[in-house]
Length: 135
Image (cartoon, rainbow, N blue to C red):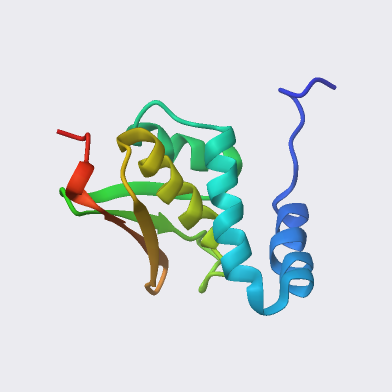
């Protein structure tokens, strides 16, 4: 079986994210996952903000859409699965990944803050506009 044919189950992914990592990382889980997301972004830099949602799909992180974009802040919406009434595990990995992509793409300091909604999460990317290269 080649790498392109290999398919992992959601169950296996959830075992790691929902059970193993919280147990290993304890109180530091969110912070470590955030920095882990930044590390992944540095190892997998994208060409544009438009590539972030497709990366999320390929990584199995969910359906992501950009809903607001301004000079100081961008907002993404991460839609949860139909059977997922709440976020079953920390999404700080995803938040760190987005922040680091903005830092890479635009040469700015960026931080992503998570806002929990009923069947979705909003990821607000706060951008330091002092040296923003997006114009």
